[in-house]
Image (cartoon, each protein chain N blue to C red):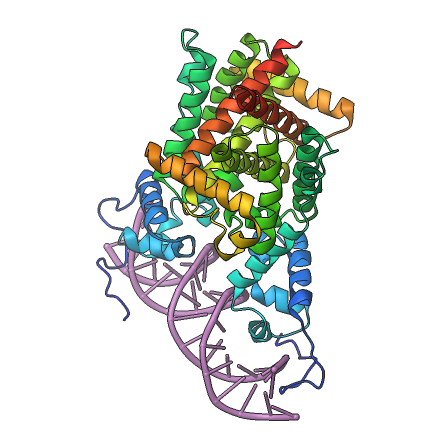
Length: 223
Length: 223
DNA sequence: ACCTGAACACCGTTCAAGT
DNA sequence: ACCTGAACACCGTTCAAGT
C-alpha cells in the first residue's frame, strides 16, 4: 500500500520536526524495534513524516546516532567524584550505575555507546575532568589516571553489553555435560542471584566494579 | 557496468566454494572494508561468485557472522588455567592477550564478538570450564566463579572496543581548555605510553587486568 | 547439488518541486 | 526554510532455471 500522506508537499506553516524530537523518537525506536528495524524510514514513519524530511536536521543516519550518543553522555552521574564527602567507592558505584541505568533504559543504545566511543564532546570531557581529579586526589599517579578511567569505562561498557544479552546467555545447555564444573558453577550463580532477587549480570557487574576499584587503590597506595 | 560473469549458469563440475573459504574471505573483508562495506554482495565479489551462491552454505548474513564469532572463539588461549605450574596472573594475562590479538587481527570482528556474546557453543563452554575450575581452585566461592568470569570478559571486550578506536580518542581538543586536570593527565598518559613504545590503550588494558585480578583475589581470600 | 540470472521488497540518500 | 514525491544505487534474500 502506498500509504497516503498526512501532509501535502510544500513547506508547512509551522515546523513539524525538531532535532530533539527526532532524537527522542530515535531512542523510542531503538527500544522497540530490533537493530535491523532501526532505519531512517521507520524513524520517519514514527514521526509521521517522509524520510527526506529528517535530512533537514541531520546529515544522515550516522549523524542521528552521534546525537543519541551525546544525549546518553549527558545523563551520566559523576557528581560523587566532585563531592569530597562522598567516598570514592560510592562515587564509582553511582557513576557505574548511572551508566547502567542509561543503557538499561535504552538497550539498543548500548551498541551506540560501545562502538562509537565518546569523542571530544564538551560534556564528556568535563565529566572526565571531574573523575580524573578525584583519582589523583586519592593517590593515583597523574600519568596513570586516564588509564584508570579508560579501564573503568571498558568494564562498564562491556558489562552493559552483557546486561543487554538474555539472562541465560551463560547457560551451557547440552554442552554442559562435558563441562560439569562450569555447569554447576553456573547453576549456583543463577540460584544465588534469583534468591537475592537480582539479575546475575548485575551481581557480576557489582563484583567487577568493587574488585577493579580495590585493585586500583592497592596499586595507588604502593607508590 | 553489468560485470561479465566468470562462470555460466548451472552447477559447476567441481565445487567453487566451501564454508571455511567463505569465513576466511569474510574476515579478510571485515579487515579491509569498513563496517558499511561488509555486505553479502562484497563478500560474494571477493570470492568471484554471485551473492545467491553464499546461501548454499549459510542461512544468511547473520549466519556468516555467527560462524566468524565461532572461529574467533576457537583462537582464545585458556591453556594457562589448566596448567597448575602457570601462576593465575600469567594465565589471566595470556588469556586476555589472546583475546586482544584475535581482535587486533580482526578489528571489525570485535563488534561481532562484543555485540553477539558467545552462546552455548561447545568450545566456549569448555574454555569456561577450564577457567572456572581454576578460579575455584584459587579460592573463589563456587557461586561467584561465573560472576568473576563474566566481569573479566566484560573488561576484555570493553578494552577490545577501546583498542579499535583511534589512539587519540581521549584527546580533549578544544574542550581541554575548560578541563585542565584532565588535559594534563591525558597528555602525561600519552607521553608515558609513547616513551614506553606501546599504545595507551594497551597500558590501560594491562592495568585493568592486573587490578581486577588483584581485587578479585582479595575478595576470595576474605572467605 | 551448486551455481547464475532475474526478481522482490527494502534501504539510505539526493534533489527538484511545491508552499 | 521545510516538507513531499520521485528517483538512484544499493542491499539481503528468494527462487526458477541451467548443468
